[in-house]
Image (cartoon, one colour):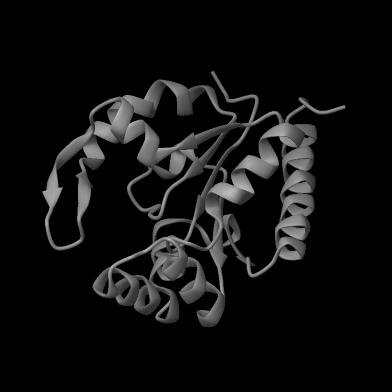
Length: 176
């Protein structure tokens, strides 16, 4: 059965504002926020602990098994710092959030990231790692890069995504 609501991945380096954007969208789009880090914790989708980064290692197969039924129904904002694990048939749009270096550095510093973790994430943003990952995993027209440096950016991004969702639903006979 075809989905009646889209699934949208919101991805980007930690600290670019994925959760802020998703939380801003849930009230206006009727989509649900699916934070993969929360799912991994609640549904025990870990494959161990990484001592170097002081973080859990997510088992991607367990995650996919845990959320497959939900994503088949549609209507989710998928909040995760990676996107290439998701089957393309589950996804309708991929938003890659980007922040300038100074803004991202300040956000990660405020999270008390270790110097190594901070540098790893800064390097990933500068080298456009997640943007390239999205472009390699999904069709070009599905991947949208958006700036996320300020609340004005968030508001503009919300409006743009709301319009996209409305158009997607209207094209499938689901909108008004």
